[in-house]
Structures are given as structure tokens and as C-alpha cells.
Length: 265
Image (cartoon, rainbow, N blue to C red; front, side, top):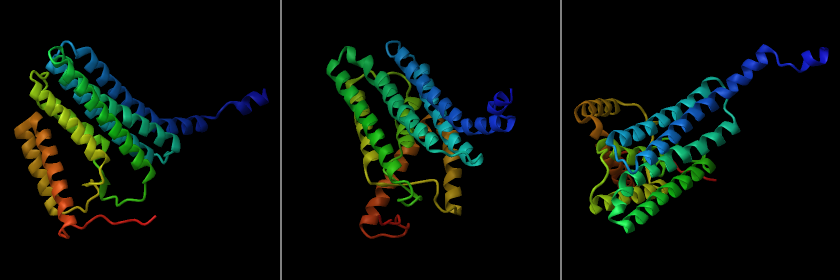
């Protein structure tokens, strides 16, 4: 009897285990959203309901919310672990690599492929490039933790890449109808994938807070109220354009905005 009582976990031990499981549970909610997006995209591929494609994209946004929340929960409860980091990385590949690629493949090429079978295969290849680049981007991030300037991402983050391609579906949820549109989506997937594996420095949210930043946020909220679902396409066009121009300016020697710090190995 004493041995059984000794082996039985106390209430405090059960609470401690539950606390350590909480961040992983939030990560699983993120995976559930990514999986739900994939299922909805596949089910809708031959039906082509605009509302279902938009919902698939919204599920990716919700997956991003849970992805940010799991890290917050881990830090707030002091339960960060190697297991949680690995689970989060696997979830990112599925939620922000495979799920958006499947969404854009079904949205852009399945129905269009009935009349353009070559475009269907080429579209599938372009979507695979996006997934592969996202996985490479995550692997590079994992091995460079603490070795890069936190004010800038090296390459476009996979979460931003997923949001960028999903923004097109949110803005124009009806399936593509012309070959030209298909080629444009292919260019989008390959282009965003290339940005993810590039060494272009993308500004992160850890920039110094200033009056100018709050003014930009205010203008962004006003544009969101005006443009609604098409705001996100404009946001990523401006974000990517600004980032590329900033990197070119650094290469030309301009230092109006401080360049990223270089960390020696």
C-alpha cells in the first residue's frame, strides 16, 4: 500500500505536468487549424466555392495566432523545452508550408488544369518549391538562434510567406479561370519561396518604438477599414518593396536606418 501511494503522483506533480503540457496543447491547436485548412482546400478543389477557400485561408491566420500564443504561454509559465521547440518547428512546416501550398494548388490549378493539364503539373511544382523553401528557411532559423540581429529576419519568415500567399485568396477567393492567372500564382509561390531562403534582411517586430512607427500603424488600421480583405495584399506589396529597397540602400552605403549587426561565430 505504501509503495502504491509513493508511486501515485501528488496533486502538485499533476499540476506541474499539466503546466508543461499547456504550450504543446496550444501548438496542437495550431496544427488542427492547419490540417483543417488542408481538408477544406482538398474538399473544395472540384467544387470551387469562394467562401470555402477564404475560410481555408482564415484557418491559416488562426494557426498563426496559436503559433504566436504557444511561445507566449511557454514563457509566461516558464515551461520552455526542447520538446516544445521541436514540436513547434514541425507544426510550422505543416501549417505555413504544406497547408498554404495545398490551398494555392487547389485554388489556382485543380479546376484550371482540366483545360490546361501542363499548367496543373507546373503549378504543383511551384507549390512544392514553396514548401521546400519554407522547410529550408525553418532549418536555417533553428541553427542560427542567437546568432543574428533580432531586429531583422534573415529571409522572409515562413509565417509571413504563408500569410502573403493566403492574402491573395482572402482578397480574391474565386478560383482562377485563365492561364495568365495561373502563371501569376506560380510566380507568386516561387517568388515568395525565394525570399524565404534568401539572405535579405526583413524588419521584425523588435524594432525600436518611435512616433513614426505608431503613425504607420495608425495609417495601416485606416487602410484596413477602407480596403478590408484587399488590405493584406497591399500590406505585403509595401512590406516586400520597402524591405528590398532598404537592403539595396544598405549595399550602396546608406545608413539612415541602422544596418543589421554582424555576429561572429
